[in-house]
Length: 90
Image 1 (cartoon, one colour):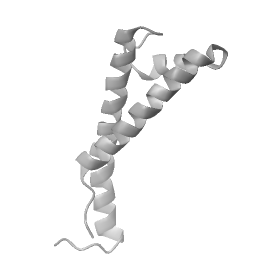
Image 2 (image 1 turned 180 degrees about the horizontal axis):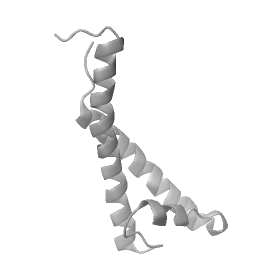
Image 3 (image 1 turned 60 degrees about the vertical axis):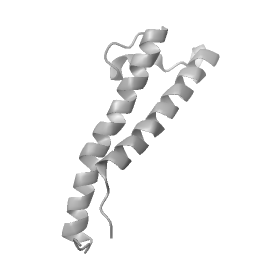
């Protein structure tokens, strides 16, 4: 069994979160009465509703969150898979 590569996991999650972020911002703009921008303000340092600078800053930050998740998750998964999953190092 192959181990998870943190870069592949990180870029996958970062891309997924970035797409989700863009869809959420579009939703907030189309339906302002149901907007979630207050959550973005709390989660993303420097984010303000809504300027181009803030939008792109949020996009970069959300992608970096995905990289961070991959950087932490993949080694943890690999460790526990070796410990309990019976994977062999080749």
